[in-house]
Image (cartoon, rainbow, N blue to C red; front, side, top):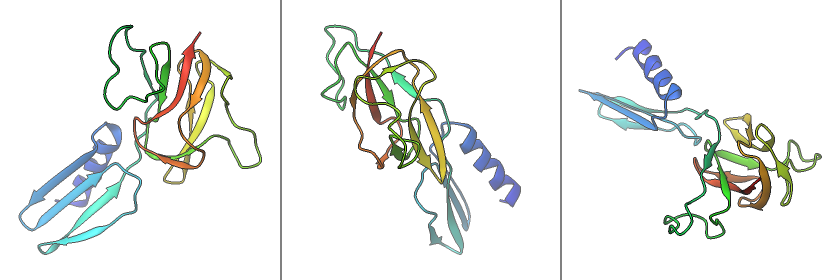
Length: 162
């Protein structure tokens, strides 16, 4: 496998929701993953295994409210009720409630949000990504502590739609 093919694989992983690609050919093995952790190399046969992190860049995901009378799925936050919408993390990174340490929080409990309003920042690989609300409503609960690591699709805020 040549360098151009490896670059094409990295671009493919970066442009899609593919979390990991592994290819093995005789004495060569490569694994490309989308995650924030540092690069590690493991020796496999006579060629090194390369693990290259790629940030996942996409719009914030918003969970639709559950239908009334339906049971909440396993793993759903206990505080989530049928009349709230969950704003979830679109990527792996570090969650920040404010743009810098000397600035106020983007949102607090009770604040009104509308589509396009920045609700937090997630830092991934030294890039600060503004996360915007996709729903109009009121913040009823903040589910993550400031400066905490977050996973892809992790609930960040509960919003009561307006």
